[in-house]
Image 1 (spheres, one colour):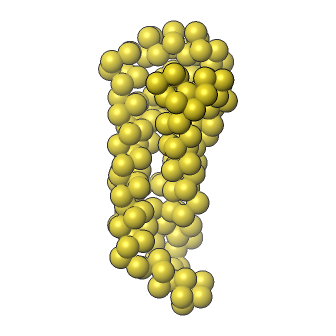
Image 2 (tube, helix red, strand yellow):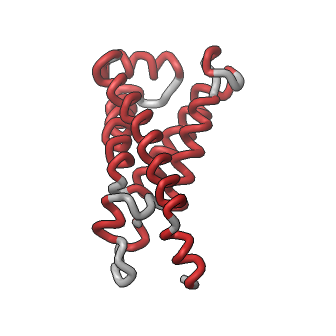
Length: 151
C-alpha cells in the first residue's frame, strides 16, 4: 500500500466516519433483530415471512433474526466487520427483491427506502472495513497479519 493510502487510513476523520457508520448501522440492525425475537417472536416473524413470500420462512426467520441481532452487535464493536457486513448486505438484497421492491420507494407503503439504505451502508462497510477504532483493527490490524484483510 502506498504511503499516501496508509496515511488516509489513519486520518482521524476517516476513522470517525467509519466508526459512526458502523455503530449507527449496527444499532439499527440489532434493533430489527431484537424486534423479530421479542416483539414479533420467531413464530410471528416466520408467519409474516410466509405471508410475504419469503422461502422457507420457518428456517429464514430465526436465521435472519439472529444475523440482524448478532451481526448488528458485531458491527457496533467492529468485530468480523467485513464478512458480517457482507452477510447483512445480502440480507437486505433478499428483503429488497423478495418483499419491498414492488411496494415502491417509501417505507410507509412497505417500500424499500430503509432496506436500500441499510444494504448500501452494509456493503460500504464490507468494502472499506471497520477502520482503526474497532476490535478488528486491534486484533488483526498489524501489517504482517494474515487476517489484516478484516481490518
